[in-house]
Structures are given as structure tokens and as C-alpha cells.
Image 1 (cartoon, rainbow, N blue to C red):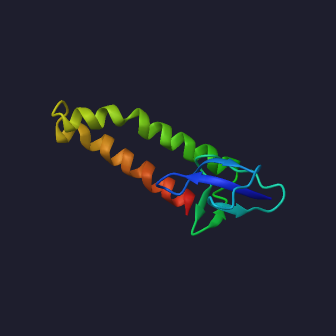
Image 2 (cartoon, rainbow, N blue to C red):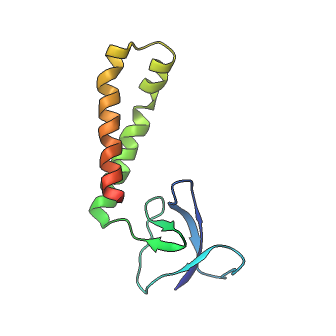
Image 3 (cartoon, helix red, strand yellow):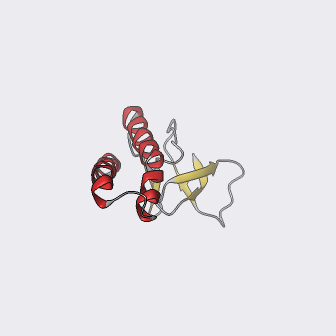
Length: 106
């Protein structure tokens, strides 16, 4: 199956369509039966990259949710509302989540 796709700055597929195909826009050929996970699977150098099975997809989504939920503390620290000491454990946890995301996506 051939699809047109759009990706974000991380090469994650954010939308796709299989009909009608517009050969003037980015497209890639997929094997039959491939399921595309929006925001997870990628296109890198014109090649489709299936990131993971459902378990990995769910874990990546959970880690990204945890990062988003802790963004508020980052802003408080940037604004001086949290000291470096108060923010240290949050920063370490966010780093660990990013490392895990990168490992799952590799």
C-alpha cells in the first residue's frame, strides 16, 4: 500500500492518507496489513520505520504524558518559583523518562 504522509520535527507520522495518492507530496510504500501508529511510527530518509509493538507504543505514550504533566514544574523552576534543590528530583525523573523513550524508539 502506498501512503502520503506528514511528519513532525521528530519524524513521527502525524497524518497520512492512502487515497488519492499525490506523487508530488511525500509518500512511502508499506507492506500489506501494516498498522500505522500516529505520533509514534516514523518516516526516516523516506523509509517507514515501525517503532514498536503495542506494549512499547503504550509505554512511550505514558512517558510522554508524564513529561507533559511535569512541564508546569519546569516553568515554575524557570520563573524562580522552585529552587534548584526542589527541582533536582523532577529534573532527574524527566531525564530518565527521555532516556527510556529514546531506548524504546531506537
